[in-house]
Amino acid sequence: MGGKKKKEEEPWINRFTREIQQRPPADISPFLSAIQSKFGEYEKQIGSNIEIEQAKRLQLLQTALMNAIGSLQYNPYAEKTKQAFEQLRQQKLQSLEQSKSQAISQYTAITPEVSQALRMAGAYQWAKGYSPSEIEKGKVYELTGALPPTMVSSDRAKDILQYYQPTYEAGMQFMQQTKDFLKGLGYQDTEIENIIKPYTSLIQEGYELAGGYL
Image (tube, rainbow, N blue to C red; front, side, top):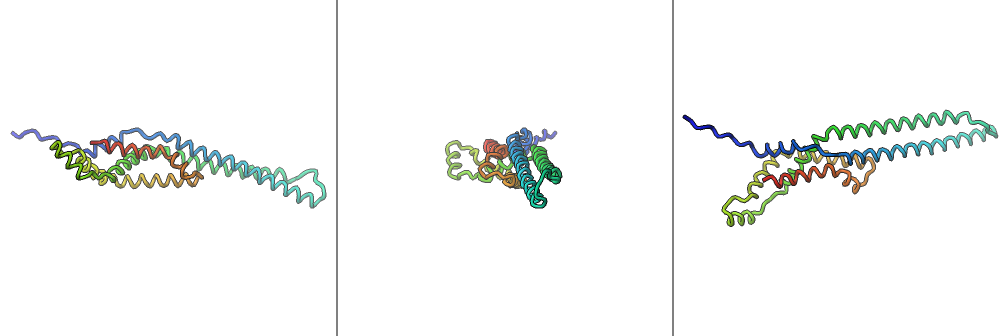
């Protein structure tokens, strides 16, 4: 009679990946608030610019009519001019609102996937920079006669580099696109670094998770 077949141990990279997948999505509320804040500034700016242009146009009309008839009790074009500028203001605000809603909904929808990808990207960064010293490995073996944890970590770093590279590249592309988006909104580099902390903290979390997964 044959003995029981030994159950194969699940590859550690599968367990590690599952742990990342089971972690909750990031809270990106501060990031979304920054987007809303900048769009709010643009809404005020649109209103202010429209008022200035409208006042200029009305003044030009009044001057033209005064020059034409010598006196002016009533400007027949004033109301139509105001209506035209109000229509322009509404069009600009509607377009701005659509852009804001689209950006917020897109970032909200992809949060679970992005959270997973950036944690994996952090693990990849850890693996990419992992290079245990041969001298230190030798010292551990001399003192204990056992394989040092660094050698185990080295093998796991290779696994991460092998399996996580596509996700890492996608995560870095997302980060660059997000920075470009914020820069397009008018944020400065120093402001952007603070705004994207909900995302950079995920990378740091993945880095620390990989480093402590022995």
